[in-house]
Image (cartoon, rainbow, N blue to C red):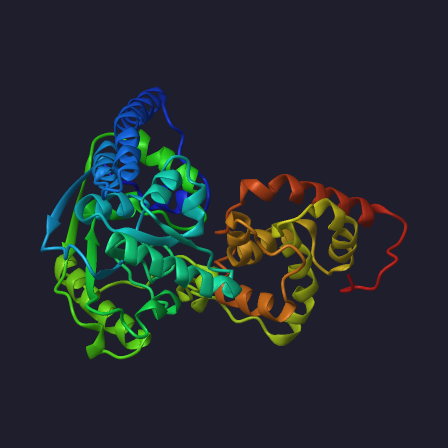
Length: 414
């Protein structure tokens, strides 16, 4: 049985489902199988490396791990064995297990995966290059790691969407990691890969603000298995599409064409914001009444004060100043809470799942633009547990100030 729309929404917003006793048993059994296979494969891997023989054991283990996690992977098409750059759509950490099991490829994956227990360590054994989407200064070093992985493993897979989606959407392809193909190394071809989880895609997908640990726990505890078809599409010579943008565009065209043919329907816009790759789902905000300039000006200091709750720092240090700002605003405390849930949380909740999120302050102009683009219908916003205690403390501080004899600060100031 798949997830209901409400369950899917709750998970994406960081509210994992409760795991019952049987679920914990399934999780324990699958973890036990992963551990037993690990005890077998890791010593053999290092033995092969010791005698300087190419080790098949990461590929074998990762293929087993995909199966133990519930995936029943089927390979469609012929993967090139060497001198190949795979470019794939991306839904889950299981993608890495399945593609590695089918091809032996090394990977480029988002840095958050490195923090996922067991999976992150296994990915390192397979020479995964972890990319921090915020570390723009580190791109050159990441490309050097990518070149080394390509030379050592003969094949590398990248997920150029820069994040995971739901299997029915395809984000614009980012091109920085394709710089390794400018110019292409001698003899290297590009082979697009399309991953299809069928009707289970929405349940398997790691999207929204769900953490990697919650996603892994949820999938390992679920009942039964799920299909995964790994389509290795026709390769092409990157020299025929000079430049990384042209290579990305051609790869995306082929993957989209295959995905549409499999789904039997056009792709849909992705429903969740992914701020680190600058993707904003605008459909929910587009139908809401527009805020006039006067209302935006009145809300701006409130937005900034509430956004401080999502900073990667000790927000209690900001509480006094933020409480004064909220107390001086023209909004009632319940209305401020709705602004928090319906407007601010959808805009900046992503910052709390980053390895090193914004800690100083969100730019006021950027924040206002983002809130206008991402706000949800009144009453539809949901609270994020990770910041709720801080909000309750800020709410209490605001109420105490309003109950005092006077306010020292002018309305709207911080």
